[in-house]
Image (cartoon, rainbow, N blue to C red; front, side, top):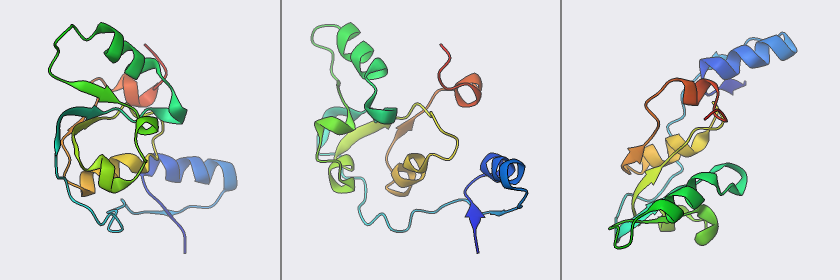
Amino acid sequence: LFFANNPLLAEQIAWQSGHRLFVQSPVALYVDVSYYPRRSEDVLVPEPRDACVLNCMLRRFAPEGYPLRFFQKADTDRTMKTFSTFRSVVIFPHDYALMTFYEFYAMSMPLFLPSHLSKYLFPYSA
């Protein structure tokens, strides 16, 4: 039995294979850690494919003495336990089947996402 984790993915699979899948949103019950923000000035910005665009811009244009510091997944040991210690997470969705959102949501972490719909439809647009 196969499922898609969102309607758009189900439609893509149907178009490519001719097979219709049930849609079931993930719950990420395997995430066995909870939000515990010990790093009160640190914000995780897990960009796609180790990209540097958003992180580089945030680091470059943050004024001197800015109260937040920005980190990539590559700056950590990449474990959920470590991620749970950040103050919050900035997610720029690059894939409509992105599991990262569900995982951070399951940890009850504060999430920041773009508010404009085009960032989800055309994630690499400006």
